[in-house]
Amino acid sequence: MSLLKLWQAYGQALETSPIKAQMLSSAIIWCAGDLSAQWLEHRAARLDGAQQPSCVEVLAQSAPRTPPSEQSAEDSVRTSSSTQPLRFDWRRTTVQTVYAAVVWAPVAHHWYEALDRVVLKMASAGSRRFVAAKLGLEMVALHPVSLLAFFGCVGVANGEPVGQVAQQIKRDLVPSLLLEWLMWAPLDIANFACVPVRHQLLVTNCGCFAESIALSFVKANGFALPGEAQH
Image (cartoon, rainbow, N blue to C red; front, side, top):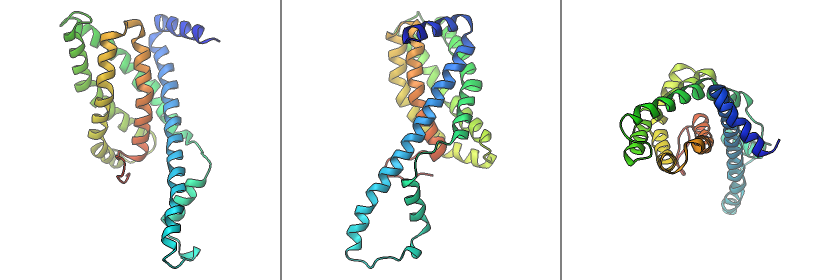
């Protein structure tokens, strides 16, 4: 099937069964996002492991060699993880895919419909006030709630204790929310102001793909800036 026919079929599905179409598209996007996040994590681990020998060799010139039996467990795990082939965590991927289809897609569908109805009562479509009102409501209402739902639902579905889920929410919610605001603010402004309504979903889906990679990484590793230790 060509891309044009696939796009036409998707558009028709949005007309006849919008929630089902968005559930399927969200599942595909979040599945691809999580797999991409796992690939990036594995690649980062390999690069980190590949850089370590040069440092060790420099230090070894002025220090006695440590017997293999005395190698720290942490170094052993790091070396092992950096040399192993990529093995996807399919449970992690499945949980996030199901979350996207069952929770995120229906909620987002009704949210955007309600958002459009509410804001149209306040401003004319396409006006600066219209764009600003939509952006403000998304930043204040949608993003905090969706992040809480993501960390909570995915954590519980993965079998994490409630205390652990609450700890991650306390630790990672605010920095993750700031990251979402930085990413979505310019994208939403351009989307609401410049993109025809019939194509806005495509722009949103592109943003959701990048977001799913970021959220998948944060959920699995915690939020850490470059140079900081991950949790």
